[in-house]
View 1: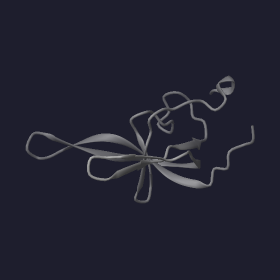
View 2: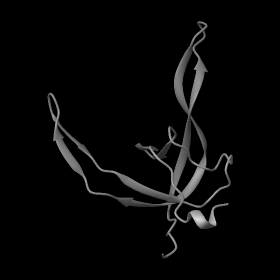
View 3: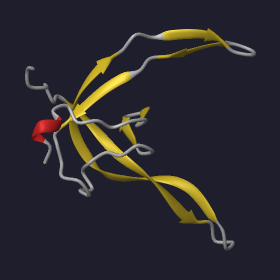
View 4: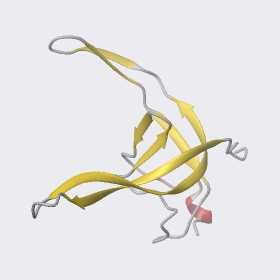
Length: 101
C-alpha cells in the first residue's frame, strides 16, 4: 500500500451545545483543529426524491493516525469542513490495524 498524500487541510468539528440565554441550548459545531487529509471520491448515486432528484457521493478521507482518546482522532458523529463543504463522518476504520497506535 502506498503512503497517502495528505494535501488537503480539513477542519475537524465536533457537536456542541451552546446556551441560548433562555435556559435552553442550541445545537452547534465547534472546531477541534485542522487535519491534513487525502480525499477519494466514491461512485455517486442518484435517486428520485419526493419533489426532486437526490444525489450522494461517498468519500474516503484518510488522515494521519492518532492514539485512541486523542482529540485529533476523528469519531463517527463528527464532521470535516472544507470551506462551505461539509463531510459527515459515518464510520472510522484503521487503514493498517496491525500498526495501530
